[in-house]
Length: 249
Image (tube, one colour):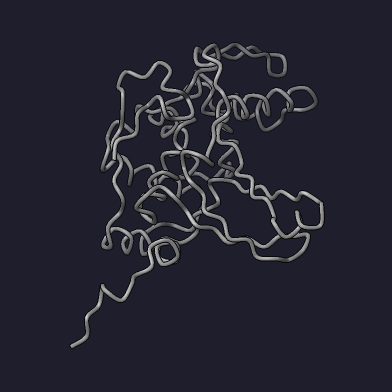
């Protein structure tokens, strides 16, 4: 399936190609994924990137801000043939189970991107000035590989933040120290950078109809990245077979 870069969280800003191609995983690939995908968060993320790149080498030239959506899209088209996704959640207020069909084009939204942020920035962190870039997956992989190997930092969000710094390959220790040791307004600055460059996918809102009957509007929010937990389970839920598929002799 073709994804236009203009339909990515970055809006396709500064891309040199107009689309990427992603296909649903087949039965063999899903089995392989279950058997070989690491449990460790960082190694799993690296595994997902390499899996995407085997199929579409241009993944390395996509922005990291688009990566989580591309991973989600790959999962979604694997478990659903029509870009819809059935979820079941329990309302924390009334304990009623809510069944909801999510439609990609209707329910999944990105925060509007300001083209200015796509040109990078200069920030003051501590007593130093740093240049900020918009990292591609290729840029990010150099940083991620290091932390997968040495495990000095294991928080994926922090590693993504570190990849924003232009000279991380030569100032790695200095940048890591500045980010990890940030205090006061520098913490607010780093959070703002995270929201600008990575938290582009808005949470999905699910309204509890049972609570609404009482006159109270209760809305649950779910992270898009947390929706697909298990390929096999979600394929069963979203693609049930009917009696016409099996004809016993």
